[in-house]
Length: 122
Image (cartoon, rainbow, N blue to C red):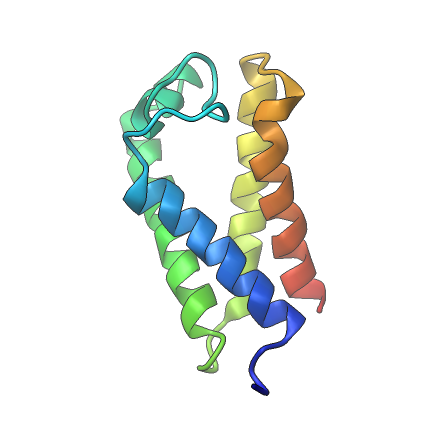
């Protein structure tokens, strides 16, 4: 499988992670939600963000995920999509710090940031 490269695998992992959080489990509590939030929307409220931020970030993450998946086989701007994800993960880390979350809650954002930067660099 010539398309199965390290960047392609990272693209699929990052994309499926984003789609899982935003489309499959937005209403599910996880140990990684910021503050005392039980849902994704409550998490944005816990960070003190306006509801519009929830929709904008969601659209950016789902859109970037789709580009990352399709970009495995099509000539799409994967570096831009990975850059958007990296930027949003830096914002996620800042929000965790803002609400004084324990470091463990930031692990998914750190991993997504590292993988997104790796996609860009590789």
